[in-house]
Length: 122
Image (cartoon, rainbow, N blue to C red; front, side):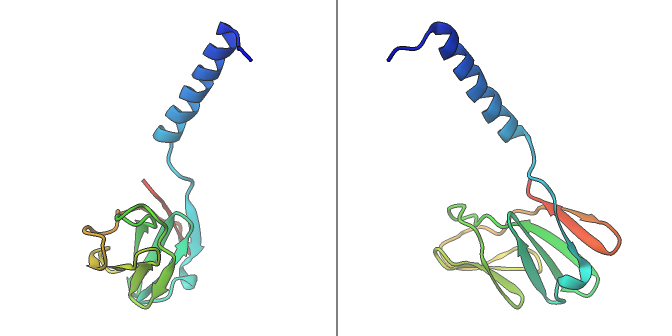
């Protein structure tokens, strides 16, 4: 089946606009009560990791593993692990600890909202 020039151009424009907006937009912010983030550990909220290395100090990272972009899905005390290839990272500074990854976690934008903290992957 053949499509008209108009249909082709409309489809192409729509695809381009969607790709452009996806590339330029930022992921929606994820938020959690400060009391839900254990001191010395972290929580994973979809695309972000929010950690509290020391009491009252919060940091956030993208949950995409720098190795191949797979999601980091495991928290074990002060480390997080991508279980796809077992790359492990520190929640203190996002640094690489072990596994096939060769760089640390990418920082996420953190916002302090009083009793809660929010983060969005960049």
